[in-house]
Amino acid sequence: MPQPPRVAIIGAGPAGLMAAETLVAHNVKIDLYDSMPSVGRKFLMAGKSGLNITHSEEKELFLSRYGNNELLKSIVSNFDAEAVTQWMSELGIETFTGTTGRVFPKMMKASPLLRAWLKRLGSSGVTLYTKHNWQGWDDKDQLVFKTSDGQFTTSADATILALGGASWKRLGSNGNWTNQLNLKGITTTPFEPSNSGFHINWSDRIKNDFEGAPIKSIRAGIGQDLIPGEFVITRNGVESGVIYPLTPKIKQQLKNYDTASLTVDLLPNTSEVQLLTKLQRPRGKQSLSNHLRKTTKLSGAKLALLYEGIDKAILQDMSKLAMRIKSLPLTISGTAPLDEAISTTGGVPWNELNDHLMLKGKDGTFCAGEMIDWDAPTGGYLITACLASGKAAARGVVDWMEPQT
Ligand SMILES: Cc1cc2nc3c(=O)[nH]c(=O)nc-3n(C[C@H](O)[C@H](O)[C@H](O)COP(=O)(O)OP(=O)(O)OC[C@H]3O[C@@H](n4cnc5c(N)ncnc54)[C@H](O)[C@@H]3O)c2cc1C
Image (cartoon, rainbow, N blue to C red; front, side, top):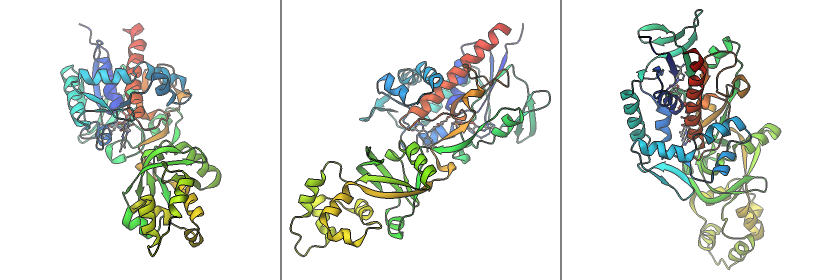
């Protein structure tokens, strides 16, 4: 009996695992490789504070989160939020939708989902090889891996690369694979942090007393457009929440001016006029901080932010103080390191891929997930696109192999 064709999938994050799962329905032998001792480490990390796996908003709006990238949009459209929740339910994982429309597993963590997924893949005949670090191709075009037992080479009829981006290297996605592609004449785009934190030169007071403090119920933005949400103070700046969707604007300002000016409305539900009325109430012998606490409820980290680098004259002038509370300027001096980013852009540019995600310069080799150069905000859009592109690459393999099998 002829042997079924062999497909090698390298990288066992959400994209690679979904590629494997999609191929299971076809008559192929699937070998899944990962450099780490266990798989899906970034996926598990994503679940640490609640795995936001997709988003329930209306489909057109959902797809608009991927910008003008029509190919990516059509790929995601074929495995959209509804498909993601359906797939989870088939794995026995119930989901719930938060107030902002974000979709999570009911148990919040990624581990039950990953366990159920790996079990199903194992029982479907997918062979998993961990501690297999892909090193590229040898001169016979075989796949070369570094393992604890030395070098291992193997051939495959088709290969799916799902090697991830270049942040949180300790979880396996180190971006080193660009060298192997470059050696084959495939260009790659430099990695850049996305959905990342930014640097602010805080005073010691903020650093020492408010590192990790969430600044809730604010609006923030670059320029006039402020968006509601929250963010977290880090030792060297800010991250999370509203900061992530602001990433492109902040990066643009940093590029143009070396610094970016983040405006924060500390009390979005109170107008400047209302605020001024409150601030002008008789203060008696109270300190300004107590007065602010009592009249505006500003306290703790928000109050510390208000005082950060403040010109003393503003403290004497309630109208200026009200203005500062409504539009506090924070100067961003740079981007947090690539390795700390939630996601990265860069990697394989779309012009190196055909519509089935096959490398134009390497027949039979497909790409999926964050290793392709695309961007999306947090909100479940990242994992959804990784899953969808894993599926698309696997379908690409099937279509490509069909005439040959
Ligand atoms: C802290 C954090 C929180 C996040 N939260 C969310 C969230 O809530 N929602 C969301 O949508 N997204 C979130 N993300 C992003 C999301 O986790 C990633 O976008 C997603 O995991 C990328 O999937 P991937 O399969 O493309 O790559 P990865 O998950 O990075 O997997 C790539 C795999 O390839 C392997 N690999 C790399 N190089 C080699 C090699 N040379 N040989 C063999 N194997 C190799 C790696 O070991 C890894 O297992 C978060 C990310 C972080 C860091």
